[in-house]
Length: 95
Image (cartoon, rainbow, N blue to C red; front, side, top):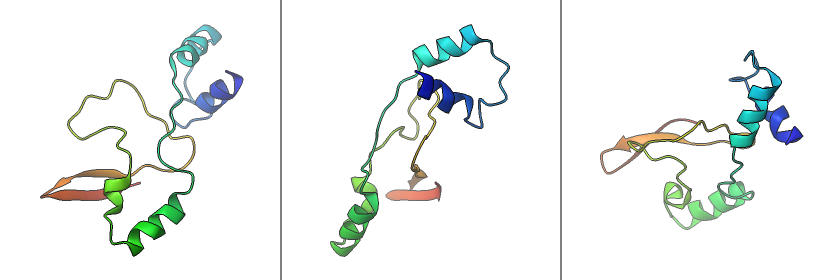
């Protein structure tokens, strides 16, 4: 929990929060670590491009547009794609 508390305290969203220790303890107790995707994303991406496979179809969806997200999602390492539906596909507007 020390690593988790350190990661949360150092996140740009929470680093200026004026919380006492009991409040931090509650946040840490409610937090969940989850892993999405692959550590070998670059190699996998290059392989998908060579096979003419849509890379987006191979990516995990963390929160889908229009669905309720029950919490705050912080990315500790790596990146996430931000996209919205556009026609029959997706439009990526950020990472």
